[in-house]
Amino acid sequence: MPALMIQGCGSNVGKSMLVAGLCRAARRRGLGVAPFKPQNMSNNAAVTVDGGEIGRAQALQALACGLDPVTDMNPVLLKPESETGAQVVVQGRRLTTTRAADYPALKPRLMTHVLDSFHRLAAAQDLVIVEGAGSPAEVNLRAGDIANMGFARAADVPVVLAGDIDRGGVIAQIVGTQAVIDPQDAAQVAGFLINKFRGDPRLFDDGYRFIEARTGWRGYGVLPWFPQAHLLPAEDALDIAGAARPGGVTVACLMLSRIANFDDLDPLKAEPGVNLVMVRPGEAIPGDARLVIIPGSKSTRGDLAFLRAQGWQIDLAAHVRRGGHVLGICGGYQMLGHVVRDPEGIEGPAGETPGLGLLEVETVMTPDKRLARVSATHAASGLEVSGYEIHIGRSSGPDCARPFAHVEGRAEGALSTDGRIAGSYLHGLFASDAFRAAYLAGLGIAASARSHAATVEATLDALADHLEAHLDVAGLLALAR
Image 1 (cartoon, rainbow, N blue to C red):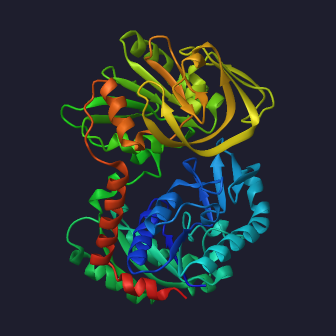
Image 2 (cartoon, one colour):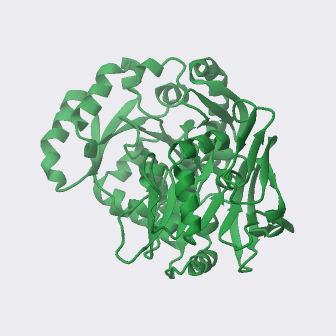
Image 3 (cartoon, rainbow, N blue to C red):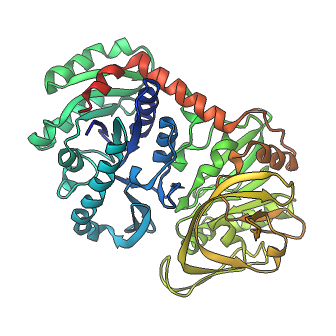
């Protein structure tokens, strides 16, 4: 099975971007290539063409390969619902909800699905590039592992370790990983690379040689910081907000504790006329915000309580009194109504929670989950938009008579009587260029003429160029066996 696995010496070392760049580089060499991540933990999911869900990073990697995303690219997706529990999605569909302490008992069963998906992908492609999760140095999690060395050895896939020099201590990251992992796991490692270097890479020559000498592993290069990374969809909500732009109009988004499916924000972040502010816990909603976005959430009632604990409901009321606009997306839409009921305890303890009362709607959580890629028509502008739905619950009420959009002939979402408060279950709206421009114009914000899709494609090409210039890409791809 021709495959290569990129594992990291820690979380957020750049594995997802490295895999995306290698996928695009392989594709440009004429290879049929697909991404694969055995296990991902993220509430930022993408809806696949086969009607399931996978991590958003794998959807971007699929784009780098020129493929539509399918559930086999991320067979196990863990979606945290609380500090100690997560929903387990297997090959695109919810299997169960489990506590972290009980998850290890599931892993042997899940490995069967992981290998099944991997072999199916590998049989259809010339090459599969695999992304690990976290770090193989977390040896306390090694028993039954399906995400790193457990998978690599089961599938006999060579591993390259990526270290993050921007964090500091990269020599210890790589040498220390070799020191703590099992010798048979270490034998699966074919080499290492250094990521996120700032400045002159030659200044690390001595450190690079030290790692090679101490580990016996081959180095595949030192990769400088990729400055265009912010133009690609963010995997972590903490990576979304950018630097303030002089003259930009403030759009604020609440950083909910279980924020989910926040790819809606990426196209806004890239707009020169927009200052996108992620309002973190303990911070006030900026008084100059023209639009406040309440994003999706994996736990609507839980995040309603979290929102109130920050005092954001007071800020929102003041924002509305000043004439500001509010857009609730998915879970955020549900929060805008008068009440969220969960009689069956689907998202947590059964019960109901008062909403913000900014829309005349109410929501009832239901066991069935809607997963669909959709085309819609924005009611106010008549413009076509492409997006996706990924939610449980149904919302109804008087304000639904003024829909946000129409999807396949049905009304979708709701608007307040003055049109300043809007709710919708549609994710990904702002990736539609004409709609984004019209929506921003309605807020008095001039949009650029840029194409979001073309920008992402160009950035993936630039990422592949970046890897080709600084890493031994040919050597890395040659490792696949």
